[in-house]
Image (tube, rainbow over all chains, first blue to last red; front, top):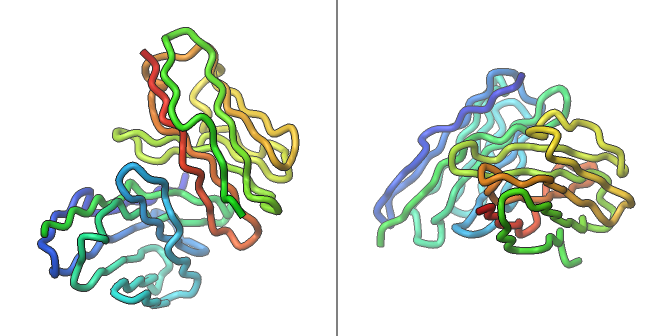
Length: 110
Length: 112
């Protein structure tokens, strides 16, 4: 079945440093979504990427979808303490079912 | 809209007891999902419904778990009998055709 791998599992950064998390799928995806889960909270939708090579930005967050539609990344520029949480990618394959990655837990040190 | 509503927020029970988790999806959403989240296994899809019909329950761990959706505004996930290894956060989520998932606040289940 479809597998979605996400690295790193944990990342500690100093406030102001950049952060990147990577997502790789074992199969070609129809789209990929990103979610953020704050500590003690629930996953909240951030963005969906559909097109090969697509790049989208939300303020300090940049999302990319690979040319082969099998990988994606989320980059945060100049992290802030409000960025703390776990970031999940979720890939949708031919069956249109979302498979979640294991998440990257981001800690931002003030 | 109030979003996806789950109850209870916290449930503490003893091994062997029946547990029922409840979910009210967002009005108009025709897909409903039950996920389980643990540190070891991350977010696991247990079962999902489309228009109140169970479509894929391959993620349900075993026969002790069952889920129903009697109408478009209500779903339950039942564990009978519960075991300590069932301790986790259980999320309900719903979506419409645009595939963006909306999660409820979750139920933190502790089975002693």
